[in-house]
Length: 193
Ligand code: ZN
Image (cartoon, rainbow, N blue to C red; front, side, top):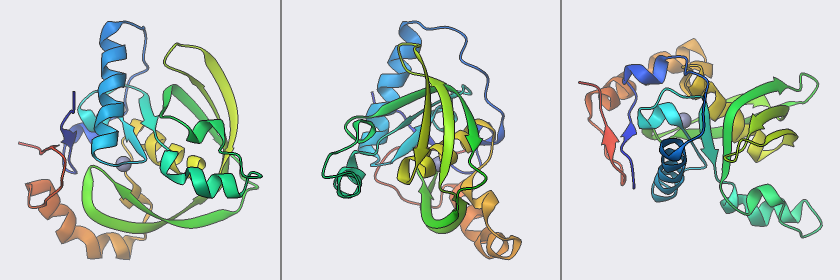
């Protein structure tokens, strides 16, 4: 089921999400719905607060980067770019020695806006997959970017928070318009009351 995506201005996007405590059919259905919604909206990632669930869970889809990633990997598509990924209760350690890189980001909760954000290019992530199996991965490149953006959502942080105060000020009217519902997207959105 495609879920409406909560738009900028929704209070849940500013809350710290709670740990996922238990597996069950409801959680598995939520994960399936999030993957379907991310696909319809053509996003590279989607966090549970963006569909109105304040839980430490996000999904990512690097399949559209598969060809580029294969070019950097002896022609082989890395496993993580073959299918959507599920991250439950992620814990991230940024690699402080990694270079910071500037990448244009967008957010399904903030339609029609893309801005350049600087972030480290590498990190380690510990997480549970959808079967509650624990993993620890070193990550770099596009997946490191998506993970940082989505993990921010679990702490109530949006990518626009990383912009300079001047840039944020310049975007203020656009963001207010989005919060009011004065924006179009080709996927369902839920605006604050
Ligand atoms: Zn986002």
